[in-house]
Image (tube, rainbow, N blue to C red):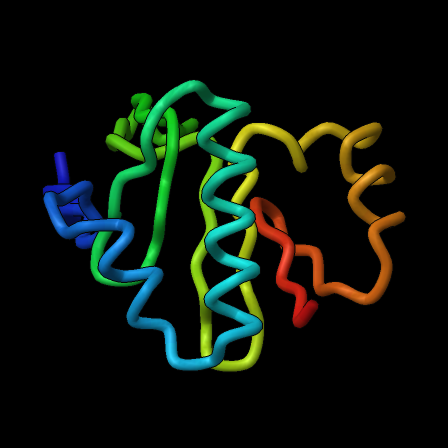
Length: 118
């Protein structure tokens, strides 16, 4: 059996609030703080940093058809240079949910994330 690559993006103890407060663009910083508060209220838990740029909530074991299992998060977001990525790792695989996601307006919708500028 071939050795599986180790996941590089892991949960860590970096302060989420320090990370958000360090975002230079005030609009993006405020958007991220708002997203954090919405996700915290929805999930009823504090978010954690995953790697150096993703804030994730609800840790779980994701399993794949290849029998591979990795520790990951169910919802999260990441402020990128030109957009914010919203990760909905459980929602967009369903056709009904994908149709709903497409109604949010100008955004790029991926298999497990939505990228938007505002």
